[in-house]
Image 1 (cartoon, rainbow, N blue to C red):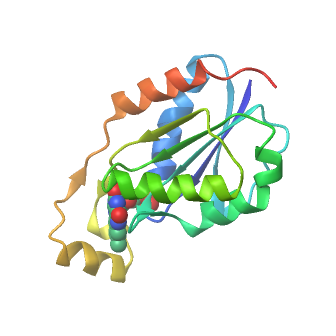
Image 2: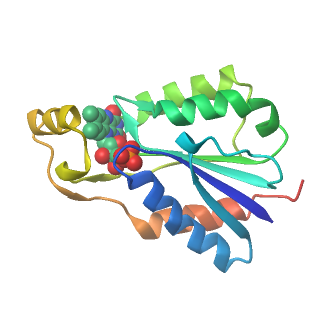
Image 3: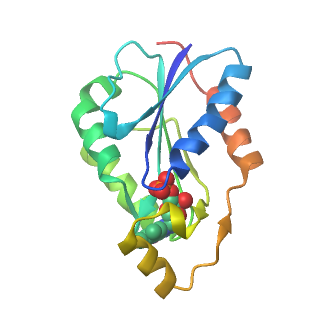
Length: 160
Ligand SMILES: Cc1cc2nc3c(=O)[nH]c(=O)nc-3n(C[C@H](O)[C@H](O)[C@H](O)COP(=O)(O)O)c2cc1C
């Protein structure tokens, strides 16, 4: 199957994580394209879409929200999987479920995973917020969990 993995990102975490997912899907025999939502790629011609975003205060990146809104009619016709970071799980799920409901989109699967905190990869304001919140530095991604979720989700995809 031809699969699009689209990432909404600020520091590059969601995009780098998308490449890890792509490795897994490629290993399963799929043709995978990883794209940044801010480049507004078309979802046409894909059999399935994995949409992933870092979050800020519980919300997806604006680039991904805009992309989903713009392409909702096309996305309704194909399997969609959504991946978010895991902190503030309830709030993130409530907000992302709300966005998906508004767009009349029902993902085949939703995953929640932690991201990373490297001050130098964020902008000045975000760096300041991270400092004020005394956020510990590090890569908190559980790549095995992300790979497992990706494989399990791939198992739920049916060619459209
Ligand atoms: C200002 C700011 C707010 C954040 N808010 C949240 C949040 O509400 N929930 C969460 O799980 N992570 C939060 N994060 C963590 C980011 O989602 C995490 O660092 C992620 O790896 C960033 O990936 P991205 O740069 O690809 O979006 C926040 C980070 C920043 C800088």
